[in-house]
Image 1 (cartoon, helix red, strand yellow):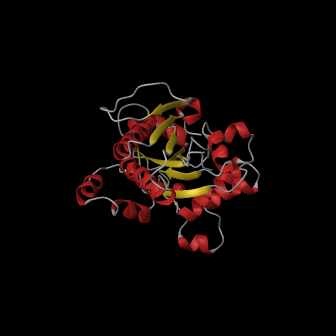
Image 2 (image 1 turned 90 degrees about the vertical axis):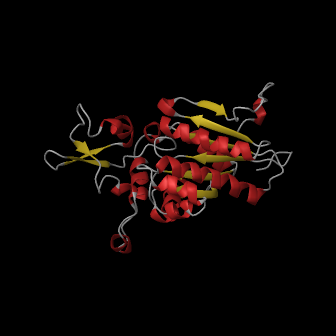
Image 3 (image 1 turned 60 degrees about the vertical axis):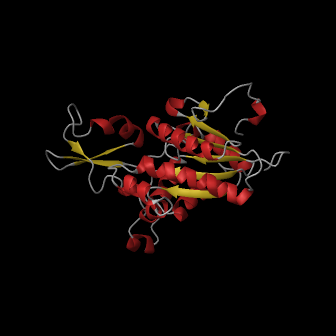
Length: 274
């Protein structure tokens, strides 16, 4: 797991459309007739800015059931032995050909598990940590991942308990700022990334020149990840921080530096995240 110099590469992953393509539905409500319509995560990413505005999606809105399948089941249903939506969706995806459910970051996830690199998931979902891990265990049981991940942390930033956990980890000013944002997902992911980096250094030591990389498919999330990694770089100038953009099946790897950081010299390919 460690290189000769004692350093480690840490892998952070978004899940949906980055690690796997799942058919978890997002429900929208038509304000003109009250009817619901289910869309995919990929479709939603392209239309969410159009909801309630002019055009085809002018009469559609987000409502209380919109993200219901991205949350854990109500306790009474879970108590009856019903599988969590996340586990169900992974099992359904595995019935399809591999190229239909393996998202762009899948090879990196396989590699991280095989090499037992410390790994974290940072997702907008609202499941518990146990549910996320149970879903990933299905991938191991079915032979698609070589080993259980060497988990560093899991943050599903729409989970109420994790929201409070993340907000409690920042100062009062940042907490107020985040609480006043209508869509807090990006801000919470930014806090989560910083917390995971700090946890990694507490767990594995601050001295080696560790490397941290996170992959995501959403352009808006890429922006927040860059900001989060820049926050971390400012506090740990001797560490290296990477952002892997998997949007539209592309792999663009960026190394993050503060604006005033002198970037010179050639990059040794063996020292990139991996």
